[in-house]
Image 1 (cartoon, rainbow, N blue to C red):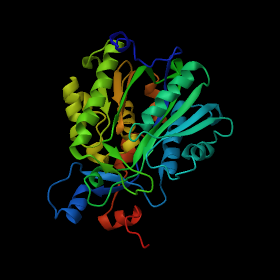
Image 2: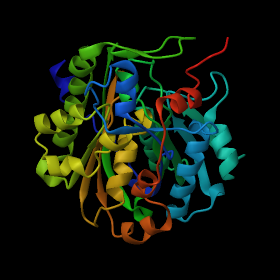
Image 3: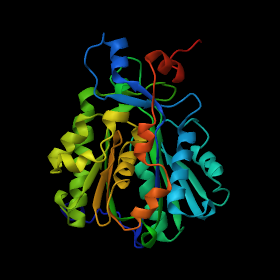
Length: 358
């Protein structure tokens, strides 16, 4: 058993790979946390975020994934037909039985000769897709793979989740390292059967285990994944210019960073939860896009996702000089965050179908 535990756990393709294009998307509508508090808690100061993003009536995981992916393709400067896989990670796919990925691929002009699949693993579905794309490109099965992490707001009215359950995410094109704007050094995954958050078939809203979602769920998985990754690649927290964690609220990523030895400055560059809420499968991925929007060549970046159920994917990467020109080719994450229209709780309830007539 000891010998097995000492084996390398690093997920590193034989052929070096990296991110050749990325793109974010955040819906323009914003619901202030004070509005939720006004309706359910008499205006008490219970807000863990300032406001959260809300999808429009005509928006869902498909439309948002297309928008983010178009930004990624623009930055990569490749033709859609060159993409050999489209993988969309989400916990709010529009259809229970019908893939999101084929619709996204069709809209982008990637069909018909491509691999397509939907990924599900709560909030780490997007990073799962990135690791799968690393493997495909790294094995030589295809030159480019598209990985998307995207979600819409899901939260039971009056529940704590309603304060943070937001919408948005990001898309990443994985390709050969020599074309990359950020070369991926390796990834590491840590999973266990930990029922901290769930939604059964035909259940409209997810349930959660309260404080159980912190420890032994979030903190156990992120800290173990990151510590083992650092050990495998021979680095310390001080080697990284920025670190991005899954952001279910404002407190968890800050505590994780402190426990792992990262500074507030390293975390701050990708901490978007206070401004747009928890974008679930897009949470860590959109934090990474915000960091890439400002990153400089030579900087090391570490991203660690978390998905309830439970698991974490930690990924280490180094920014290349191609970042300086590539990021100018599409809207930045901040562009989407700044483009905002405030709504009240009544508009939110209507847009999210929280009032049903049958």
